[in-house]
Length: 102
Image 1 (tube, helix red, strand yellow):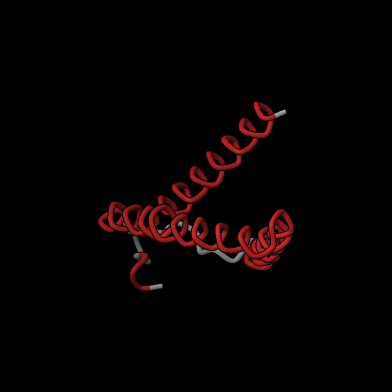
Image 2 (image 1 turned 90 degrees about the horizontal axis):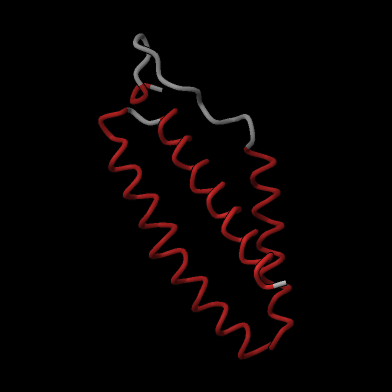
């Protein structure tokens, strides 16, 4: 069971990472793509994961296994935000309309 769960975790992480890289490639001016990728890595990797790990420890200390429900609730909120924002991202910049002028 652990092998299956870890495999699913790896696949969902890979899908979100590839989706973020595609979004950056399609919406950010190529001259700023590396900066955008670095910002994405910093926010999600360092700050995001560090904050969530700290909060998870605190939740587990306070609520034990029931702390999972708080994390599941955050996942539901993220899903609702994704649903609300889907289809609203700007398309790739054209030569007539650079990304910086949108």
